[in-house]
Length: 134
Image 1 (cartoon, helix red, strand yellow):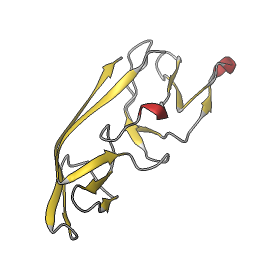
Image 2 (cartoon, helix red, strand yellow):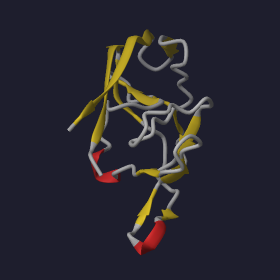
Image 3 (cartoon, helix red, strand yellow):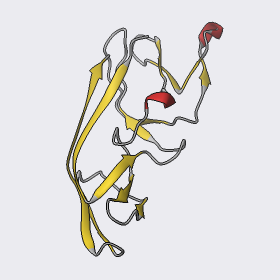
Image 4 (tube, one colour):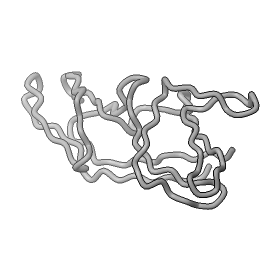
């Protein structure tokens, strides 16, 4: 199984330590079959906390999905040791105050709030991402 990395880039205003929140954080993806290239019609989610056994006792993965076109079993595993701050996520901390902002929604690719302790605006802008083969 090859490794694929999610690269995440954003402009941060007065916040730091952007990260996923907990093992139940849902990563929504459209899956592509490694055999025939069929792309799933619906968004699927995977979580760090999920573990599904692979066929033939070859271990486990965060998600196992059978391709509707060619019937090949595809799997994906989240490597918890590779998740670092600023990889991706929906929590951050105020640079000056340490205020934790935990319900950040980046679906619109921008997020803004106000840090009462530091009396300054905070934000995440110009969010982009890409998957690359490692």
